[in-house]
Length: 509
Image (tube, rainbow, N blue to C red):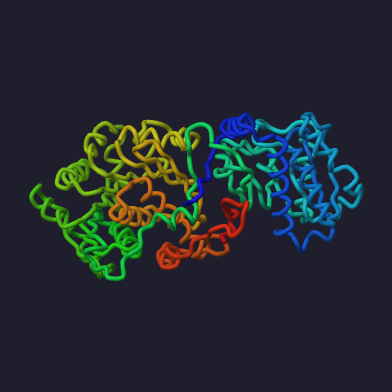
């Protein structure tokens, strides 16, 4: 059974801590587990850099208490540790942990430390750091500029754990977070560095559950292809798109579908795009857009699933084509790009078209904004909620692309994929994802699980194609070529108490 890794807001994280304590786990025990796990990661990750000692900047709250626990555990391993307190501890737990560490720490040598720990403020902090905390953040930035590696406990100080807004935050080399992923960490990937999510024995997460997709979960969810499979059992996919001058989008979707395990593809495109598609994807069948309902039914009844949108174009003609396709086939449908744009500000009509059928929508934030009648800024600020609201209104699963990608099911469940690099920030990336998602929707049948697996593997393929995380020199064909490895190369934490890891932005692993 795979482990659930919740994605929480700051308020949900605080409520989960409180519920765990109320259920009988002492708060001091949670702090001890958090600090011990962070110390273990520091020892393993920075083993070659600990000779000069470790410098810890501790705040007055429980995040500072975590820092005192880290200090004690490192000192007990013979590592020189100094702690600089940005104010006296204000909680009983923090005072207890400071007293337990007393006598084990060094009083000098902090300037030479190559590992510096940010234990100033935790998930409950909001707004820009002030006073002694602001001074300490400036010290963190100075240490980083001098070549030190910064380790943040729970969140880098100055990062809003819910929104991801970073005010004066010192970017961390790695962040060790406790019990759950915080929403803001997934938005501000450039600030948190490499993320470790460690288990400290928290109880059930409080509030609406959003779950992080992990390699372990995806590996268990993607169905295997039987040794005696043939093209029919691997299923057939019809892709409708490819307006004149936009055949490339359909080609990318077809190639990614074939790389994702579909047995057969039929590309249904504008007449002018037919020779281009047939020359570029020889394994695919091809046909022109249907002119009537009977022709549409004949083309689509062949398929086990339908993908509408890649390179479709947006006009009244395309709206009628989408409606004709939806009326002609009750097969599972994935809708992307212009197949969504033709329903801008008209989600009720789209919902009526999709009622009582298996469907997955794959909008980027601007497309989601058009469907929701909202601004792009609102979609980005409320991405976790917007995806679920659109799923409810359209009666379909929704894969809202972005950093991170949020996938909402029709049953109210939500998952998040946080894999990928900036190599995906290019035209055609969504077409590649659409081909993958449509394939998995046909093979899995559930929009939430299909969309989540597709988003994760799409991001993983980018990481494998772009090992330096710079995006330069990488094109989508490289990402598609990497799918052969991505379907079998699952990043799974090898040790407990680490529940999940995410590589730093620009440092894919």
